[in-house]
Amino acid sequence: MLYNSSIHYKGWRILKPTMKTENVMEREEIETTPMEPLSPMSHMLSSPNFFIVITFGFKVRCNPSAFVEGINNSLINAPRFSSKMEIDYKRKGDPVWIPVKVRVEDHVIVPDPEYSNIENPDHFIEDYTSNIANIPMDMSKPLWEFHLLNIKTSKAESLAIVKIHHSIGDGMSLMSLLLACSRKTSDPDALISTTTATKKPVDSMAWWLFVGFWFMIRVTFTTIVEFSKLMLTICFLRDTKNPLMGNPSDGFQSWKVVHRIISFEDVKLVKDTMNMKVNDVLLGMTQAGLSRYLSSKYDGSTAEKKKIVEKLRVRGAVAINLRPATKIEDLADMMAKGSKCRWGNFIGTIIFPLWVKPEKDPLEYIRRAKATMDRKKISLEAFIFYGIIKFTLKFFGGKAVEAFGKRIFGHTSLAFSNVKGPDEEISFFHHPISYIAGSALVGSQILIDYAMIW
Image (tube, rainbow, N blue to C red; front, side, top):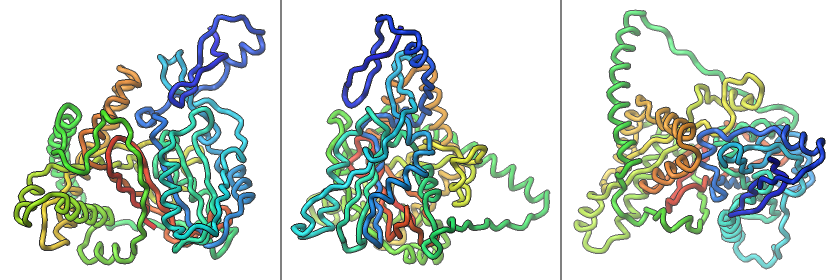
């Protein structure tokens, strides 16, 4: 049985089995085509509607030729950027990666609008980004594209909007590509410098044995509790109906992509003052904003609104990187053979309860975020989630994995993720970067919060 013809269905190119006789050379070529199955998380994110949109703001005008040359010399070396996804009936109809020849020019799009007639460039970019975010990915070719716009906005002289299917990789993988393709602005020929991790002094062995034993007890107890909550969410526990929740039965709603630039120095000031992590501050900010938003969506007096919001169960699906080494220096080597980091979608998900009750002290939201995140950090919830996806894919197939993902995203109110960027000014294909803004568009949730830490 050969797979030498195809049909297109909902954006997929599906290989059709046929019994026609072909010459031996063509048959051997088809049968020896290298196919690689998708990883468990990539399988869950294999829908044509799941992708990542990244906006690069540059300090100079875009040179399309430089992008084509740079992509040919770097991105194409990553296997996922030179492969397409197809349905293979030999694998029970599961999608697989198939290497193909790539013509980079077909993936670099340079629109030619009447820039002089655009009254508000910032709104134009928002509309343009939202428009491409609402177009399903073309699954008949490698799943990425660059849109280059030589339009000056309030924050940049030109922009590159990159649309990449989420099955290609998670935020850490894509950040590794950025670092591998980037150079220092101060020295265009120099790679990005790396930081050195500081080692903590080692205390006595007896102390570490005691701490380790107590830590294992806490991990075991916390994991049991958080795993129980995860399973309840998967089975039936939904968030209270609120303005943030989507409806999985409605399919995929239209997206509006909006990004805002905040001062990282302000975030670090709060972090250092309160002795917390950057994630704690960002989650606290999210909780404070959601509290104000939800309060404005209900009618009645302030006291009545407070009672309504206090009764809400609002949770977020937070993506967690599962790689053991996540320092910037490891990311740049992720594509290299033998790297400690893993390419692709090696992430888990935790269910994060959001504190949206009205508070007089805005810093209380950050304290609540830290307390919840500290509890999540010592549990194995994210690893268990990944293990469940892997087990489900192996024994029940891809349809069960997709249904699993729909329940997670359908039973929570929003998704949250962030990625750490470089600590210095860099250039991307000889274009100095002024900012990066990313959005991971997955699931049926109305709100997705994605932070790029620069």
